Amino acid sequence: MGTFEHTIDAKGRMAFPNKLRECLGVSFIITIGLDGCLYAYSNEEWDVFTDKIKALTGEKAKAAKLFIINATTVEADKQGRILIPQKLREYAGLEHDVTVLGVINRAEIWNTARINEISGSITNEMLSDAMADLAL
Image 1 (cartoon, rainbow, N blue to C red):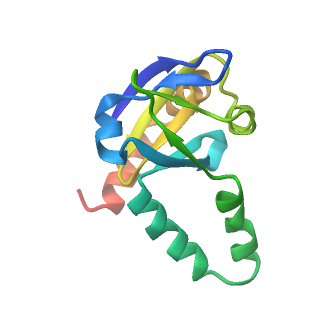
Image 2 (image 1 turned 180 degrees about the vertical axis):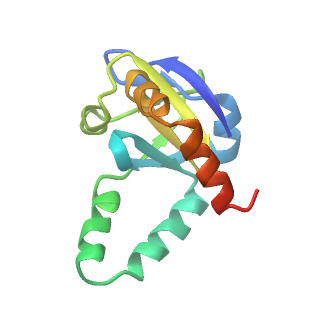
Image 3 (image 1 turned 135 degrees about the horizontal axis):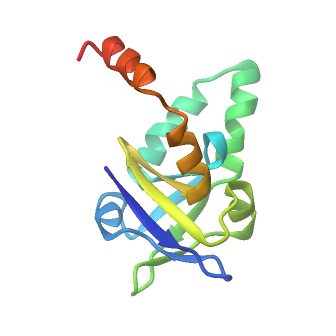
C-alpha cells in the first residue's frame, strides 16, 4: 500500500518504489489497467489473475484477454529502475510525472495528472457510501 511519486525518462525508465518491489519481487508483470493506468502484479498474483481469466467465457473472456496480450515481464536494474515498453507508456499517458499506488494485490502506475483528477472527483459522500457498503 502507499502512494509514490516518480518520474519516467525519455527511454521509458522509472525508479520503482522499493517498498513495492519488496512485495512484487525483482521481476514482475505489468499490463494495461482500467481507467488508463497500468497494473503491476507479482508472478504469484499474476498466476491467480490469469487463472480467473481462464475461467471466463464468451465476450468477457475476449475482453479479458487484452490484459494478457498486453502483459510484459519487467525486471528492476541495480538502481531499482524498470523499463516500461512504449506501447504501455502510450496507453497510460506516461510522459514524465508518474504516481505508483500500492492497491491490495497489485501496484498501479498512473500519469500523475490523471490520478489527481480522478482522486479529486471523489466526494466525501462517495467515500461515506463505500464505507457503509463495507460495514465500517
